[in-house]
Image (cartoon, rainbow, N blue to C red; front, side, top):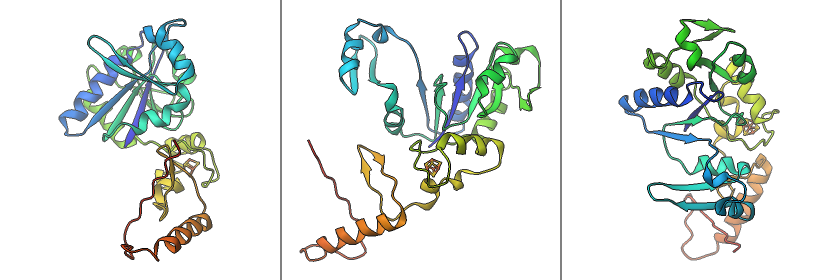
Length: 244
Ligand code: SF4
């Protein structure tokens, strides 16, 4: 799944921009998911849901017309891993640094404030001024040229695993900035490109393992299983350990 964040201050045109890009991508046959970062009633200090979120990892909310799942900010990986789509468009999520971003700006100075080395384009209110480029970035009015912005999103969207395993020699946020600059590609992320032979997940999150550790896990598990009736050589093995 590839992703782009649409970041901007209040009244910068984020929602309109996300909606326009999502519509074009949907028309092109892609599956699109949108995640919105918001301060809602259930975030209000003292509310029931706020109190629950202080003690639980996730809170399920059933409202009259809406259902929601509330995660603590540290669980952004878990939140995104719940989605299956070709493109994930994030509205807000300024703190997310493992995906590129479209800056929805009201004023030129906001492009630098919010770009953070991850910007691939500028849109939002500022784009209606007729400006075509700022700080080397294309400025696209999503209300007039949604196709053009969707093309940029399609070409430049990516999402790194955000696990900071260090196997590439960098943090995910550093790698993301280098990919945006064109100095690296997503294939330089070892976790994405190598498709390791042994994958261990803890609560759905990949546990980074060097080659020799993978080999150790593989040999240990195969060694134990090979003596058992029903074991078949050359098959995919899945082991789930529940510690509940
Ligand atoms: S190898 Fe991939 S997951 Fe690991 S730190 Fe680098 S970019 Fe992040």
